[in-house]
Amino acid sequence: MGRDLPDPGEGGEEAEVPAGRPTAEQIERLFVGASPRHTRIQVANLARVPQELTERIWRALGFATLPDDTVAFTDADVAVLERVRSMMEGDLLDDQTVIRMARALGQTTARLAQWQAEIMIGAMLDPGRRPTDEDLAAIMDTSRRLLPDFEQILVHIWRAQLAAAGTRLLTLADLTDEGEPDRLTLAVGFADLVSFTRVSRELDERGLAELVEGFESRASDVVAEHGGRMVKTLGDEVFFTAADPRRAAAIALDLVGAIRRYGPEVRIGLAYGPVLPIMGDVFGTTVNLAARLTAIARPGTVVVDDRLAEALKDAPGVEIGRIRQRPARGLGVVQPHVLRRAGNH
Image 1 (cartoon, helix red, strand yellow):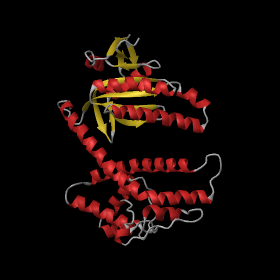
Image 2 (cartoon, rainbow, N blue to C red):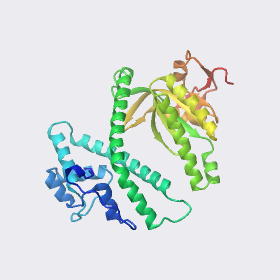
Image 3 (cartoon, rainbow, N blue to C red):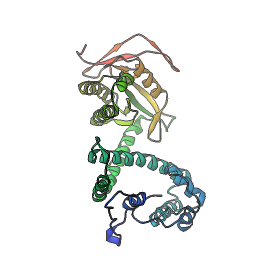
Image 4 (cartoon, one colour):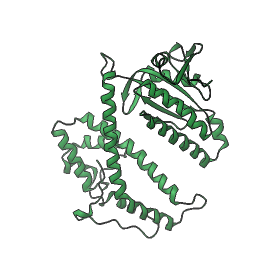
């Protein structure tokens, strides 16, 4: 179930921007378009989709279940549900796939919307004073003017990301472990900000936000530059993958330098082996090993496992130094290695 913007070319009217403090209804009107006309029961009946499936889709998208008599759905919601029904009747999607797709869409767009709203509000409001009704109206007006362009950009970038994901999966197809078609062989890494808890106590909220955003943005740039994938960010830690061990090494070494120039130090753990991809994330013993190696690493260093060290033994520009074996929780005793740039001691 989705929200379509009105198309002026098809008779839609541009939403009016309130002159004073916007209400929830006015915000809904601006971003959704048409006013709600249907209850959750009516929207399911009109789209000819089972009520139970409709409610599961709605919850998977991240929205609360509404009372039977609450009018909260538009004709656009009916149209989107009809598209879902059409795909299912054409045997393109089954119930489970629809719910999984809805959950992926809901979680991703919820974070995107929150992030974009925070960026716009932060850019337009003075943090040193309470916003006035005129300030809020100005944000609404700017949103109205930017919304069509943002929508077009979003669709284009989504298609480009789909192409990139497809290319990565095609590249990884030859690396799939025999007998386990759902597993991939990847280099996975964690980069952890050193002394984050202590530093966070010394900063105010704005300073802490700037620290985290600076860390994540620099890490994302380095990972993207070398063709890796940023799996997720966890405030003081980022988790990335790369299909090629040499790319993973380049990411880790460049990350140390990029974050050090920014101010803080990072420590990084890398492991190479089979992983299980689920819901855009990756899981498995290789991931756990990388996390344990991160805890072993000293500030400003990169520690790798045996398998990655072996893959990098002939790589130009890097050196591998074996260090003493360590116990790793849940994994027994592991053999770590320190990764350095050649000649950098």
